[in-house]
Length: 221
Image 1 (cartoon, one colour):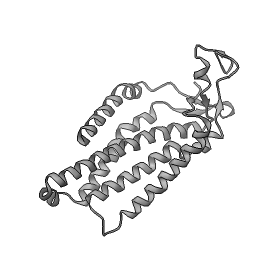
Image 2 (spheres, one colour):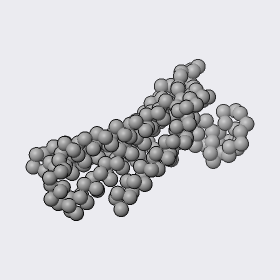
Image 3 (cartoon, rainbow, N blue to C red):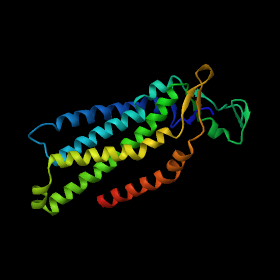
């Protein structure tokens, strides 16, 4: 089948505001990441902050970093002068929906698909690190002596790495639910979903994600 996606937001926001904010986020988080290497301020908390800055930087890039490039290759599928036509075929989709449908040629469709999943992955890392930082701060205030004796930069680094690896492990299967190939005139053709991976993506991944979110929110509360 043909690779299709919704244009997320209006043109000028998608091509100007979104990427601009993303690039600003990348620059600022990069500055924070480097600044926190200062030996005068380094602590278990700053290790979490560095991981958070890295995750936010990568999430911003994956969300809008290449959007200006993709915009050059978007091909509108919906036709504004017909209420029920998508590329010449009758459809039950109203024009309000089809007007936002676009396609991407190969290999940009594959890049877009992977980046969309990576953005979700790094966003989850950010959530986990924020919860870890909040818990670390709570323990530092509630149990200062225990915290001083048991918390270290190495342990914070290990926890940060675990957050990244956990997010990668539960998100990676989503990238293999379908395969994409080059069709005629660089058309991006998407295979049928792989049955086992599709079952994980539709059934188990949302449950795991919701559970992680509930735990993270509970920790922060």
